Length: 215
Image (tube, rainbow, N blue to C red; front, side, top):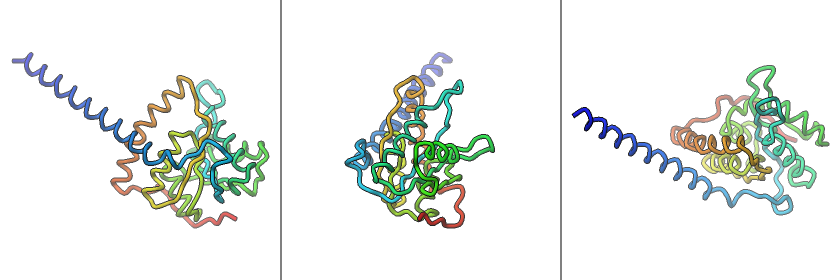
């Protein structure tokens, strides 16, 4: 009898695992299908938007090395600005401690690459992708903007924007091909599931605040 119980539990766990895998796969395919057409790889082909929303991440990877995801996003934002495809850059990210400040890091590196300081705005409350996207619209007043990140991240950001009736397109920063890149992509699959939970439950940004005019 005990053996039968174990067998039934094993079947139940296997069934539940299959359901979870199918659900995660379906959500990821759905998000990609709904957003890929609004992302661009070619600077020459992307439409002009007043503001580029540069999504933050850690400046450094494990071992103190420069994070390639971060560097490629900086490169992409600079390329858009130099091509006249955006007029301003809104650097949005986490500012959890005095030592960890994604918007400030991005501002410093954008300036090093020749972007004028007065063309850069900072959003210190971009704690999550949802916060960055919605705050760009609600706080910084942008009805249309270009999201700047890797393709998988842009797709999630655009999906959030679509849900909130915000007109966003994405410019794809160079992707990262490495073991770390694979880990990030795996996390992204789970992040899309959590995104759906946020949207279904009506969750908004953690912080709002006074409007900021970008001019």
